[in-house]
Length: 112
Image (cartoon, rainbow, N blue to C red; front, side, top):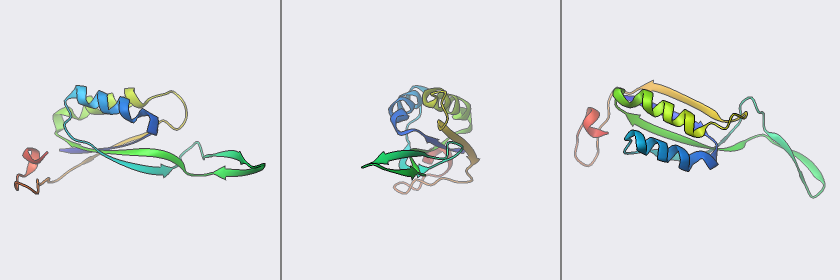
């Protein structure tokens, strides 16, 4: 099992969700987040005063899936979230040692 964490632009969430459903994904966790990378935020004017917006709105997706779906899921996220502009986000893939469904006690890939 693998855990995919993807940080994307908020307006791309629906496209990414649809792309993952086409791959056969059944569950996803979405968390609103703020952050910055190479884009380093931006400056804005408010009532004549200029200020720096360091942390930009992002969305973090967390998905735990079987090893057989990882490549297709990562590719689906990358294609759906890509705008070609700085700040498109990142995808991280890590190993999951165990998963347990609380309701039934199922473990491993049966739990996801």
